[in-house]
Amino acid sequence: MMDPESDHVSQLLKELGPAEGPAGFVRHVMSRILSERQLTSRRTVPFNQEGIAMTRKAMWGLAAAAAVTLAVFAIKGFPPAGRGTDGTIGAAKKYQAPQIGDKDVKLGDAEAQEFLQSEAFDRLIKDEPSRKLLSDDGVAASLQNRALVDALNDAQIRAAIANLSLARVYANAELKAAVEDAMSANAAAGLAKQAAAQNTALAKSAHSAAVAAVLNDPALMKAMNNAAVKAAMNNAAFARAMSRVDLAAALNRNAFVKAVAARGFGAAAATPQFRSGLADR
Image (cartoon, rainbow, N blue to C red; front, side):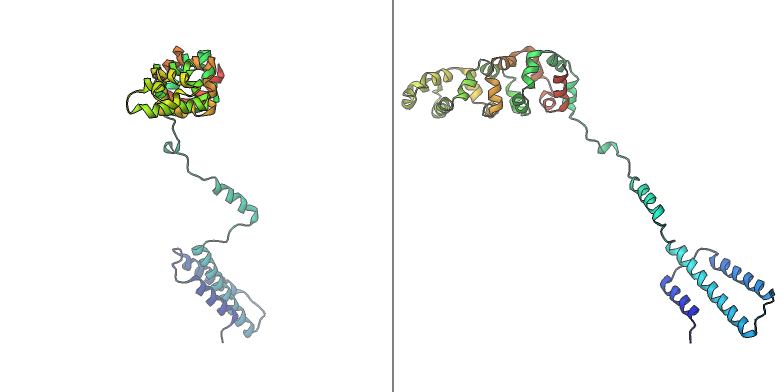
């Protein structure tokens, strides 16, 4: 019949499974056991023979169990620390994140940075009318469309917006519809300038004179045929800004014209640094 100590040792060995212990581990443990045995044998203990046999058997069992337990800990790892140190260790591991590399940093648009450091930007933020124009939310939002920025490089389009003629057309829904209808009806035949006279419905309209004036103005026609300008003027905030004499006139300020023509203006207009530069003056 197997005694409890042997059964406990067998169970530990089964849990351990096949594994190689640290070098010299078994030799060290057995050496300690033998030295303890010799020390015990030299002592005079007033036990009878049966008691001595039981004592030796218990010692061997405990020693073997200790050896197996130490081997388990050595191979599988010692138990985790208590609650007092667990939080500290966890915190240390939490902050062992790798450092952010250069490739993880999102760099700004090179063209925008080039413009923000240019003489054109410096002149722009020093020109009060231009700064007032660009500080308008409707204008600032529309200028993020690079197609509109390209259109504003055209002197005819700037002239059409600056004299408020375009703003007047877009401010009146009926007039705008009449102009667009006339342009559509006559564009294919190349008779845009004579549309008012040839279009019977238009001739009877209360806006016929105004439509004829638009159709006879090359700058207005060019502006109304530009998709980016049409999109901007259909935006209420931009159209409202362009109906103001001071803001519309600023489109032809030298500082604004030079800035719009500069490389990177469109990209820079969308950046916080651009808005900050306008506000700091």
